[in-house]
Amino acid sequence: MGISERKVREKEVLRRKIIQAARELFAEGGYGNATLRQVAQKIEYSPTTIYLHFENKAELLKTISEETLAPLADTFNAIDEEFNDPILTLKNCGLAYVEFGLRHPNEYRLVFMDSQGWNEESMDLSEEEEMPGQWVYESFQILVQDCIAQGRLDPTDAETLTQVLWAALHGVVSLHLNYTRFAWIDQKALATEVIDAIIRGSGPKSKIFD
Amino acid sequence: MGISERKVREKEVLRRKIIQAARELFAEGGYGNATLRQVAQKIEYSPTTIYLHFENKAELLKTISEETLAPLADTFNAIDEEFNDPILTLKNCGLAYVEFGLRHPNEYRLVFMDSQGWNEESMDLSEEEEMPGQWVYESFQILVQDCIAQGRLDPTDAETLTQVLWAALHGVVSLHLNYTRFAWIDQKALATEVIDAIIRGSGPKSKIFD
DNA sequence: TCCAGTTACTTATCGTTGTAATGTAAAGGC
DNA sequence: GCCTTTACATTACAACGATAAGTAACTGGA
View 1 (cartoon, rainbow over the protein chains, first blue to last red):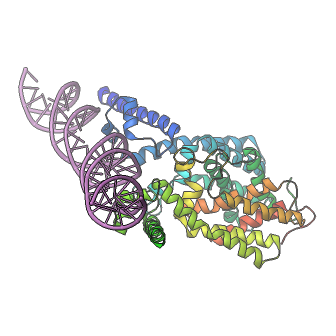
View 2: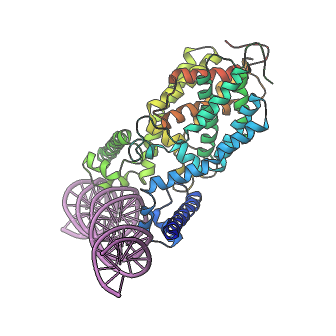
View 3: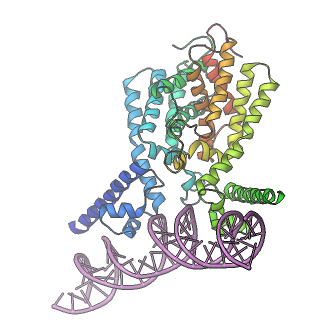
């Protein structure tokens, strides 16, 4: 019964074409400026065809954003294997996070800044379901716990420290995306300094991190 | 010639009515969900009348947001006078910033997160004009410089430290607004810890801040 | 081989949005 | 008393996301 499988494959191909076209338009003009009609025109299908593959515009964009953001998890894993030191891993993951966010501004916006559009009503995240991008928090939490377990960070509260760290890193990306023309110091230097300051400020009292 | 002055006054009254109505709708359903037609209906004028007072929807919302955010400057000044200690002032201004952002989520979003919509094209911020909300940075910069001047913070780079601090504080607000149902620790505790960690991590080596 | 049903689309359409062009009634100035 | 300006309303438009109603091709069973 290879025919129906070919159909499934072909359907998947069109789905990929939609995603690809949307991704490009989306990257050019940003989230709000991309329209379904433009996407449709780019792939030479009618606008309504998109609705056969995605519930609505929000779901299409959500799909794209999550797909784009997924590789960050791999990057985290690669860093984890490269460095044996948990503090160094934490630092480099933080840097990677910021760099990644700035390299994918539209997707970052959608997942970490614009979730208003689909978090409550249009998308139906049932009560305790995870918000998109929330796995980033959990990744950092594990790293922080590692640091505490090795006595490299103050063991009072892993949760608090993780939230502090994520907030600070997100702040760097978020402000950069918003104030693109502001006289920021070098982004990598800023990210580094943010992480270092927090790690220094959260280290065990007896031992100064260098 | 009191007649034309009355006219000006009446025009100002209508402008205030528009702003007030828009502010309410805006606060209820958020930025994107408020429509000019709803605003018009609320004040019992035609939709196009709004265009006699504001260039477009973006300018109306920008006006509202900046008006809402303005009192924060007064709060900063009040804090500055209440505490003589620059570190304490910095800490409390940071806390006030976070609290303010969370109390005015829509306006905060517009100024500090959604500026994409009007920063480059639709609004004409000529080359070196300030972005809205940028004064916050300058306020913090002055406070950081005060701390450095008194030897309470590491004097290497006021600019870097200010950016670190602002990014971290913004991150707290921004993430809270985006992940409203996330299991955040108490917002005030988080903000406090963010500021403390950074101040601790940026203090002069000889002296531990308490 | 025929035909009912499904699949994968398109076309036509709806309601809503921001906004521009045009119309209009009242008031002010000469 | 006429002309212009002011301060609105009315009408209209293009574009949007989304739905409903077609339609042509293909499929599977009798």
